[in-house]
Length: 327
Ligand code: DP6
Image 1 (cartoon, rainbow, N blue to C red):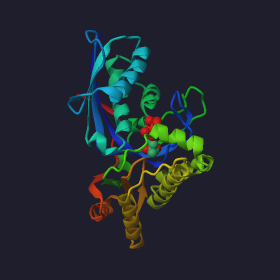
Image 2 (spheres, rainbow, N blue to C red):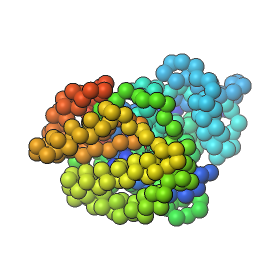
Image 3 (cartoon, rainbow, N blue to C red):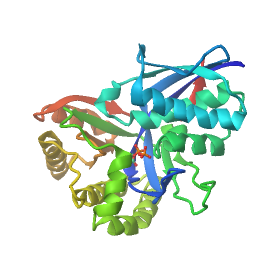
Image 4 (cartoon, protein in one colour):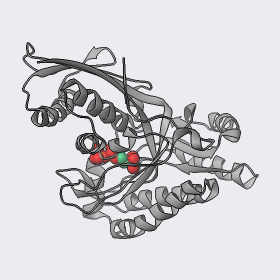
């Protein structure tokens, strides 16, 4: 069996967060989430099935990968092989447009690109339902990177997850906004999302509160996108973000992903907002701060955030396209 395909997917940043699972095996989210797919940051992956290979060969940024990363990719390919009824191993070569170690949503774009490339290379029909189901097995946030612009991923209620398929709420060019990404130095080794979510579910007294508020956040954000209401989307994004981090802080032991630079960057954004430059923060399971703002003020946020002690670099991202096959 020989089949090759290359796919690219953009990273995505959640404005209404996913944090918690309703089914850990199928990796189904406990709540719906809403994100923006980015135009610059992303992953390009080539998958080549080859009967002559004795095992999967994974190359990350030009270097042969071993250990946990190789295992995770190989386990993912097992799902694709199972669906395609093939047994061939594959050569997988993957590159991120930011260093994987910066911890910037590379798993979402990574598994979206891998799902599309592997499906195509295996000769399977790449419909959205199948791609979403596969991408989700890699990472719960990955199905959102299959689509461009503003994307909702409903939690769904079906046991098999067939109703957990992403929906495009607004295409990339429909809204002139930006996400300014302020990269802070990585602090002490952070707890991964999967483990962090499980700890939150098991130990945080705020987890039920977090779950309870998610549907109304999602509804608010969906309406704000439909109305292109940046202020409303920004307010709900901050509320969702800080509620998630509140639930994390309530864990035993607490999950604290912020560093001093994170807090200073948030304060700088609030000061600018007070001074009449609207921007709204969101933070994931790491120290970086992302600011949602009108494209016209992105350069102001980029300049001001670059001055915050501990912020190492700043990127300006616009809404980008969904995952696609590339030559
Ligand atoms: C804080 O998708 O990385 O970025 O499904 O366990 O792989 P797993 O988790 P992952 O979690 C993302 C968490 C988040 C919020 C979000 O992107 O919605």
